[in-house]
Image (tube, rainbow, N blue to C red; front, side, top):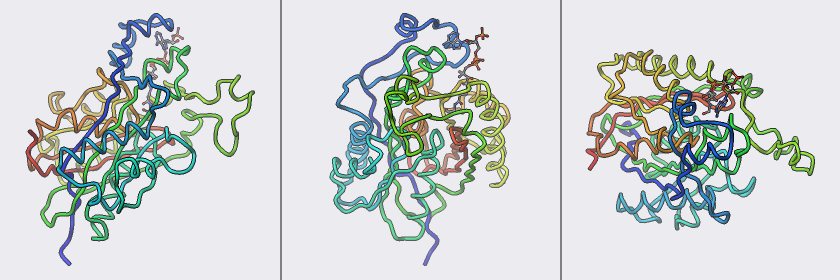
Length: 332
Ligand code: UT7
C-alpha cells in the first residue's frame, strides 16, 4: 500500500456572540485594560452566556460549519475526536454527543484531554488513523466553555480565558502534504502549578469543595509562564530542525494563544518574524484546546498550498507539543 498522509481539507468554527471587554472586566475585578494588554495581550474574549449552551453546543456548531464549508455529508465522517477540558459531563463523552447532534451516524468518537495542547494530541491521533487507511474522513474539534471554570471575582484568572470551538477535517492523500510530523510531551510534575482541585473521583463535589472554590481553575501563573516559554520554544525549534528546516522555510507559526509574551518568546527562539505568526489572542483570549484551530480558521484565507506550518502548544499536565503541517489547499 502506498504511504498515506493525513491532510487538513477544511476548517470551521463557532464563537459565542457575547464579548467581555477589558473595560467590563475592570468593573468586576481590580484590573485595567493597560495591565491585561501589557501582561497578557488580550483585549476581549467571547463568553457563552446562555446557561443551556455549552461545549457540546459550540462543538456541534463548529462541526456543522466545517461540514457545510467542505460540502461534506455528516454520514461520510468515520471518526470524531474532541479535545476539551470542559466536557458537558464526566460521562458520556461529549464527542459522542457532538457526533449525535451533528448527525455523524457512521462515526466512532472519543474525548481527549491534554488541556491547551489537546488539539495537537487529538490531531496527531486522528492522523494516525488516517495513515493506517482504517479511517477516510476524520474531524478533530477543540471546544471549550472555559467560563464554566473561571472565578470572575479572581483578577489573576478572569482576564485570561474565553469560550470557543473550532474544527478541522482530515482526509488521506498519497502526496507529501498534511500532518507530516509531531512531537508530543507530558510531565506530571506540572500538576501542582495548574489544575482543578475538585470534581473528579479523588475529590467529588461537596458543599465544602464549592465553598472553597475548588471547582475553578487553580493556576500559579509565574511558574507556568516559565515552563511555557522554554518548553514551547524548545519543542518548536526541535521539530523545525528534525525536519531539516530553518526559519526561512516556515510560512506560519501557529502558537497556542495563552499569553502574547509566550508567543513572542517562541517566535524569537525560532527566529520567525511577527508577520509570520498567527495571533488572535487579542480578540478571544485563551480558549484552551480551541486556540490553534481557531487561528487556522481566522487565517484560512491567507494560507496557500505548500505552506509550511509549525503548530505549537503548552498547557496543563504539563503537556506540550509541536506539529509540522504542509498545508494542502489555497484558502479563499
Ligand atoms: O494556557 C495554559 C498555560 N497557561 C499559561 O501559559 C499561563 C502562563 N502565565 C501567564 O501568562 C502569566 O503568568 C499571567 C498572565 C497568568 C500573570 O502574569 P504575570 O506577569 O506572571 O503576573 P503575576 O501573577 O506575577 O502578578 C504580578 C502582579 C501581582 O501584584 P504584586 O504582587 O506584584 O503586587 C498581581 O497581584 O500583578 C498583579 N495582578 C494583576 N494586576 C492587575 C495579577 N492579575 C492582575 C490583573 N490586573 N488582572
